[in-house]
Image (tube, rainbow, N blue to C red; front, side, top):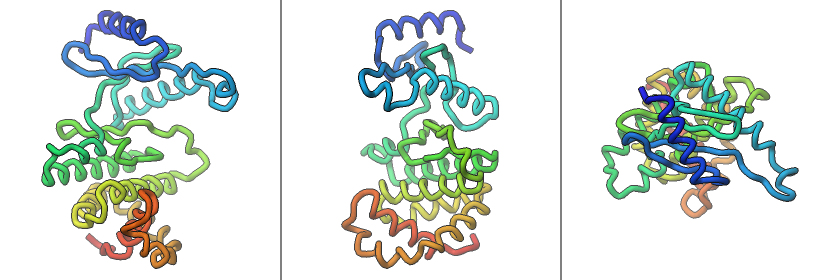
Length: 244
């Protein structure tokens, strides 16, 4: 455990050194932490963007709730009226993918771990809202989901989780390209670790959009970063066996 008073004093010093800075990284006793402060809006942005104070308080409440539930999110270390501090959770999956030091075998392990963690999150009756590879971190076998979207009440939990899985698969194809074996193995891990019902629901949902398959096919190799993966998401549900 960290000496609470000492840590709070460290946070106060970091805040003084980074006045007006939205997000900054710092270290304490050999470990990394992230300080996030309220955004200082000027001019028209005060009207166009949400209340910064209310936004950060909502984020603090959500993180505290998820920590209490044991969800795979960064640990909330400190907070106040206009700031929060979370423990560093390691590099994101996008960063692991972009590193020349990451081997094919290591990347498969990381993706498998992330898929299992997403299945566990869903089994806890939770949904992330946007689990793209840039919003999932991995460190020494431990996965954390960052930047949860708090306002999803308009959709049923099933639809939120279907959306999660589709965004996750889309992101895999966006950053890995059509490496179907690696992605198929990762998604099979999701299915084997509690995500089968959501995968089946997602397949049924995507069936209504399979008419796009042949329209998207010409763009599978030449379309933009968001367009190309649409074909491969449709392809995934067409080609993957219903039973594993």
